[in-house]
Length: 188
Image (cartoon, rainbow, N blue to C red; front, side, top):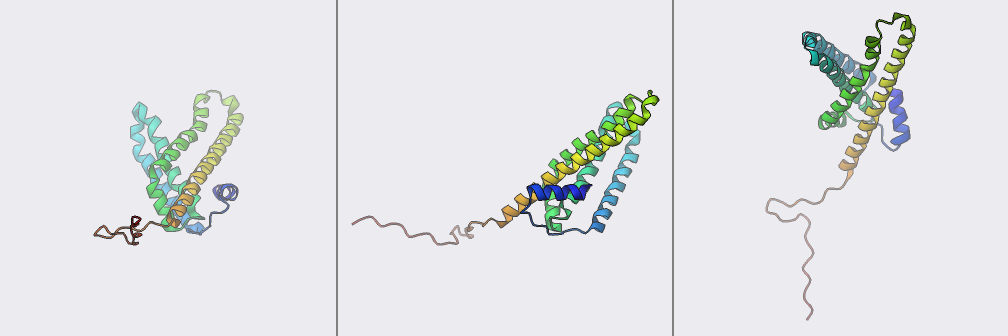
């Protein structure tokens, strides 16, 4: 779903943004697998902490948020950004992207909440399965669109900043590189 949604966002909002094909599909798959293994490892290691009441509500969504940030940012930029542009954007915008990931991580916990609230009502299991799948799909699509809009907008801004002409810088003595116009002479 992610590549199609990135294409949709790119066609509708960023039609002039050049596709520089920075990462092939196989690298995206390997990157996603590596990040997923790290997230699963963090989940397993943090399980004993889940017995502390507030941490069970904090740690899993934070880990899923980190995973969303890493994978979805990579996928949103893979087709349009070069490797250096992608690395720069993910480094500079780490906190906003992590914030988006954490929000979507909490939204991803909503289907589990549906099951937790009504686990005693097994009669409604067929309906709850459909509702859960629908919620997971909706949250994933929302997350993919949010990351796509944010990452492509920042990529466009990065390219505009790098294409802007830089003013001449003074040299070490404080003299401008471009000679200044001579001072106007007073009328005689």
